[in-house]
Structures are given as C-alpha cells and as structure tokens.
Image (cartoon, rainbow, N blue to C red):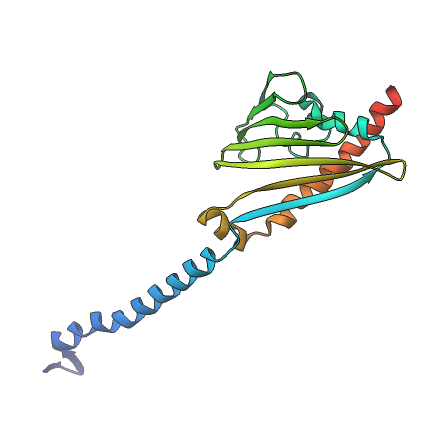
Length: 202
C-alpha cells in the first residue's frame, strides 16, 4: 500500500522489511571470499629461509671473528645504525658458543631481542638463536658459513624459521626475501670491509 502526498509517494513498511533479506547474498559472498583467503594463506609454506652470499678478500679467520664476537657487530650489522642509542648488553662467554647479546630500542624498526651463539666451529660456521621480542615475537635461526675461495672467503648468511598464520599472511603482502635479503647484502658488504680493515691492522 502506498500513500500519496502531493507529488510524493511513500511505500508501506512491507517493502522496507525486504531489505535485510537482500543483504544475505552479499554477506554470503563476503563469507566465501574470507574463507577462500584463509584457505590460500593456510597453503603457504610453514617455514622460510632467506640467504645471501658474498666473496670476500679477507681470510676465513678474519671474517669469522667479525661474527663470532658480538662486540664486532656494530661495525657491520645493517640494523646497528638504526638506533645508536639503544640499550645493549653482552652476557655469557665473551665470544663463540655461549655468547649472548641483547638489545632494546624505542625505535620499532630495531625493537627488542636476544641472540645466543649455539654452535661455533672456528673459521667454518656459526649458528645463532635469534629471538625477537618487540615489535613482534618470533624465534629464528641465523647461520653463517665461511668457505675458503679464490684466496679469500665465500660467506653465506642465512635466516630460517617457522611461520604461523600471521607470518604466512604477512609474507603474501611483503616480499620478505627481497626485504631482508637487501639488509643481508648491505651487512655482508660492511662485514667484508671491517674484516679487511682488521686484517691490515693485524
């Protein structure tokens, strides 16, 4: 039933009551799209590994020392320059297996975390347990391999770990290999320069 007032016409509430039912198909489509998105994210790999390598002119022992002693990381770590005033502590062994380094920064790009050297094979390899506390919590493995090559050292730096649902979703939005890989490349170049400088001093 409709009521006319002048040139205006007002329909009764019966037509209005039909509007909620029109929303049901739309809500159904949205639910299906969300379900598909969740399914796609769930199929992403549960683990990740990012690695970069660089040929350095310094000998394996000189390069190895840059990583094996956390006190040297400020000279080449791509993240050390983000916040020069961040709090840093060195615990456990002075270097090698058992050495622990923690950092805490108000800058979210640096955040808060902890590293501990779990394995250290002189001039060959180092395995580090890397724990992020802020801005997000995660535990990964960082590995370094030093191989004599062409009178110098071939250094491989790798980061690996597990990815939860949020990590998988983030990985779909950001190219983590490209993002972190770029930092690794900067770090390796700086490490090479630091190792060469130390070798000249020695």
